[in-house]
Length: 321
Image (tube, rainbow, N blue to C red; front, side, top):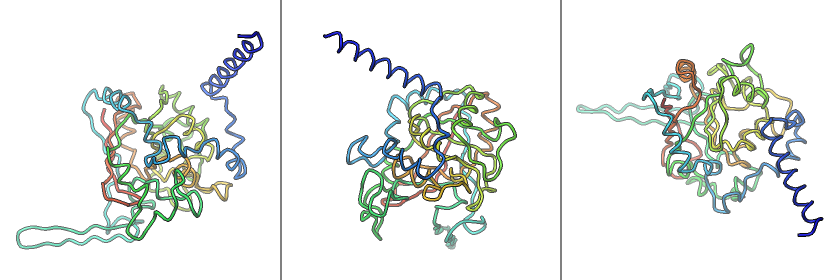
């Protein structure tokens, strides 16, 4: 090897080390992501299309490897279980869209019909990767929008996410508990906020983690005003290889001074990162147990329904300590 090639190699190693060190130290300038134009410029860098092959339909769930599941199972110490779903009535809960419940009672038994649009701000549900398009012609991984038919989604249906269940290491980022002053309606949590909370909780993010962000506002979050995550947090999720994101709202803050990307976790997270979302989780009991057990990591199991071609599924995530 010539001296020039040797020096070039050393320089590359040095720069790679500096880049990794900057990432680990949290010195990335997230504050620069403050406009639609800034989001546009960074989109090519955080797009996961073809990362797991041209036929991939599960996106960031690829980060949950068998080894990650095995590691997560070791977090079960006491057998304490906690539901992360809201108690919901199709007929009585405000905000359920096109809800219909019918009890069909006979002389010797009963059955019922349940139907609703699960998307919205009432029901705890999982958003599939066919829910939001990248543009008018493409979905996640470049699949044509023509795959969405009146019979259902031929690609990226919720059944693809449900094929093996979603099991892994869950992390609660308890903003309501650990941010000074708590969280207010309309507040957009920043990557700096997330890092601060994790530091105070003494938790480190690992590739493949399933994140839940608690604002403490729950049903107070509405379409017009809700606490959630700032658009710069999309980049944070990409860099930390988060497999799935959930919150007690719909993950996006509103209002924020963005137009095209005003709901970035839906309009970028789903179609560009391939990041499934859990909207409207109930994280109050989880917060109590985490505080009681003095740990914010847990085993979590999420099992959407296996109905072909749907864009969402009501779910009942279970955290186990």
